[in-house]
Image (cartoon, rainbow, N blue to C red; front, top):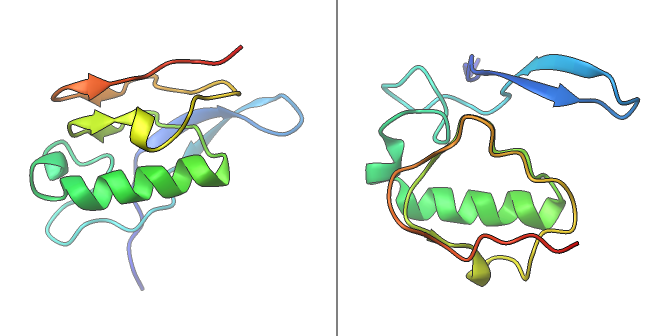
Length: 103
């Protein structure tokens, strides 16, 4: 059975209550964390991460708590965010372009 990432995140559920939830992504081979929460994965899995981040945004999942981002240009992924984006504890290791919010 595949192991899931042990990183915990604080989220607000549909009822507005704050709950702690573990990341449900599969861990990287040779790592104890998923591609997003592994401290060094951005160096070797940058393109995979960009694709997965794009998929998350398209699904409306804007929780990036504790992620480690490679260089990214968000303008190629989204025209803007129309909901709260959670970057709590996120580390941007290289250049990040065009992060903006739409009110």
